[in-house]
Structures are given as structure tokens and as C-alpha cells.
Length: 101
Image (cartoon, rainbow, N blue to C red; front, side, top):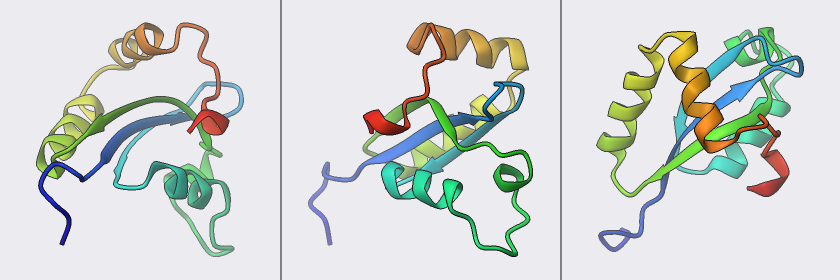
């Protein structure tokens, strides 16, 4: 069991190469999760595989899983414009951040 306060959870947004699709997710290991988005199983029919959403453009870190899940649901409920504004505040050029994690 981990000591209180040592947990890391991430809410993240991925896009496709031409930045037309947005996917919001939550994970406790962002680097590994990005790997699995980029290297799906051959039979995988997930949203990110179907729309080729492999490029990290936004993330937030949390110590509490319930807070992270609540934030993920909040962002998923937003309009595209509101999500774009959130991304622009964090990553104005929409640079792919995969190698920075």
C-alpha cells in the first residue's frame, strides 16, 4: 500500500495527427497509457484506435483518484470550444507532448 499523498493520477486529452478529434481519459500511469494508445492490440476497436488519437496535447495531475475521475467527467461534458480553450491555456501551440512525459 502506498503512503497517503504518493499517488499520481492524470486527466489527459489526446488528438489525432491533424487535430480534428479530441479524446479525454484518466490514468495512474500516463507514460504507459500513451504507449498502449499508440500500440493497441490488433483486435482493439477503441475510440482512440479508430480515430488514431495518439498525440498528447493536455494533462493535469492529481493525488486523489476520485478528484481525477470527477475532473475527467467534467471535461468530457464540455463543448469542443471550451476544451480547445483549456488546451490553449496549457499548450498554446498544441504541441504534441508525448516525448515530454
